[in-house]
Amino acid sequence: MIYELRTYNLTANSVPEVERRFAEKIEARVKVSPLIGFWHTDIGPLNQIVHLWGYESLQHRSDTRAKVIADGIWPPDITEFAVSMESDILAPSPINDPLDGPREWGNLYELRMYTYPSGAISSVMKQFTEQAPKRLEISPGCFFASELGQLNRFYQLWPYRDWDHRDELRKIYSQGIWPPHTDERPVQQLVRHMVPSSFSPLH
Image (cartoon, rainbow, N blue to C red; front, top):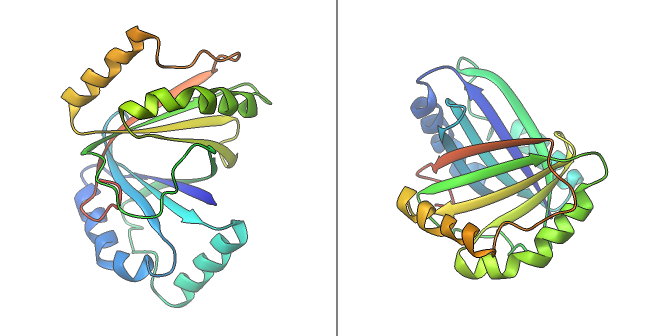
């Protein structure tokens, strides 16, 4: 299984209309391959939508995209609002539960993205995977490593009920449960705080 993380930078104040256009087409699109989650940013870079798709392989992704375009199913027309787009292909951690259906995880999602020196990602993934079970007993989360697109990047996706729940859970930092101590230090860290759309399977 691979995942595609697509990020669209939009013109100011266009997010509600863009989400409405996605919502109009999403029912037909998810019959071809699953949508994992769909969000818009709330803190950090604003006017962004972020969506996560699951595929069996890169070939499955290519075949799926060709089919939905040829059939007129996808994508919605948002060209008037799109400033730029990014696509990253991610491999999940072995500890991830399969993201194969709706999850009522929360109304606030934190996407943490760390860029590491070249060659360090496999070691970072191993250390996070080994130390994650205790953290995941407290609340769910997912880990991914980039394969194509933004390389040498490690992703963490954490859901929370709300901001108070986030503050409560982050107290575990003082208890030594999290975060793991890795051999490598990231050279860049980016954080997105996101709100799920009405049609997001993760919400």
